[in-house]
Amino acid sequence: MAPLRFPAVRLRRPGLPHAAAMRRAERPFFVRRMVLVAPLFLFLLLNFLAPISLMLMRSVEDSELPSVWPQTAASLRKADPSVLPDKQLAGTLLTELAKSYADGRLSEVANRLNYDEAGFRTLLFRTAEHLGEIDRARLPASLLGFDRRWREPETWAVMRHAAGPSTSFYLLAAVDRRLDTDDKIVRSPSERAVFVQVLVRTFWISAVVALLCLVLGYPLAYLLATLPEKYSNALMILVLLPFWTSTLVRTTAWIVLLQTHGAVNDFLLGAGVIGQPLALIYNRVGVYVAMTHVLLPYFVLPLYAVMKGISPVPLRAALSLGATPMRTFWSVYAPQTGPGIAAGGLLVFVLALGYYITPALVGGPADQMISYFIAFYTNQSLNWGMAAALGLVLLAATLLVMWLNGRIAGERLSVWRA
Image (cartoon, rainbow, N blue to C red; front, side, top):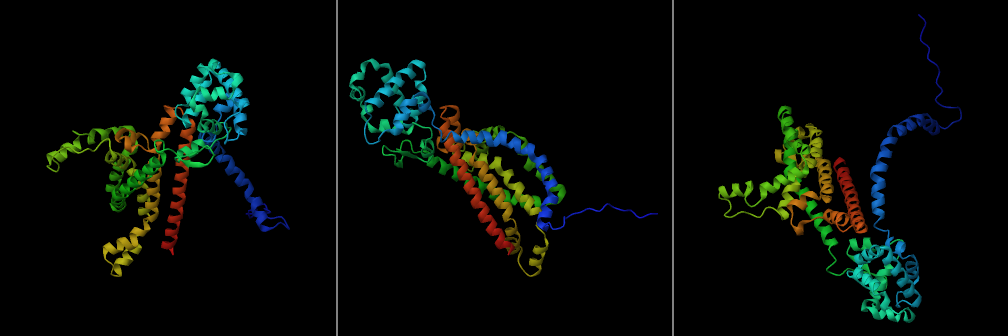
């Protein structure tokens, strides 16, 4: 029988460097991989990146006043902030004010300026309704004398800051800052400075929920990882069961359990632990309990995966060398679960940052997180610029936390491996 002969394959052209030859040989495989993942990239681009980018762009866009009052906006951008308007600017303003009032577009400008200065909408409509009382031959004195607010530099500064096409108003307002009449960044008035406090509250609630998940989830994950398989599988079903139930249903169930005459208070009263029902709902306690229950599986599953991969050999070696079981656990086993704790804690923390339904249903007015205000500006006040700015601040804070977690976890993992 004749031996098999294979065709000769030239892997490298004479004179071609080895690295270049390898890149040339791998090019068809790279193109094939790109073609396979291209639909996924396209889906993410059209359904995730593009909508989010367009929404976040609203935080720096300012198109209402320039689109309705184009000539006034151009004059405002060139105006000296230290002096009141001249006759030309006042005349242009009154002309475009009258036109927008007749066209029904004055509310677009009025709403935008009212975001910055309460009462601006009333000033514009009152001026538009009494234009006949303003003598155009005596501008700007007649306009400044019509209402005292036209004589205030803050009024013209608000319009100048909204003259577009871009603005820092929404982003500064999201961190309780604003521009004064000299275009310097100053702190917002106390009655409007609420978002930093809300952001701190959001991070605090998320951190406490992550800590509660660590306290409750670590023993549960350890039990799952060490039990015989027939028992751990049944217990794992109980852990996964919340995933198959709606978050709204689980939160509503906690309202029933934690209310004044709910199952928890009835049990504590019956056991003689308390003398009167506790306030467990519509406050911070209810938020912690419900969010911890909803997010606990997200902490347990990554930690369980890490614990299942830990080899028992180092534990046996430590015990054989005379270490106590407790010291073996803390010195040998617990450090190896660090990556699972970091992954589960980060997952719970990041998910908690964007929680909306649970705090809205079981929390009080002082327990609402930043997502509540994003939904408020999106659905009720229709101030999309403010909603986009709060979303951008939340996204930046989340990315910062993820970066810090990656740095800290990476350093700890390197130290442990060393």
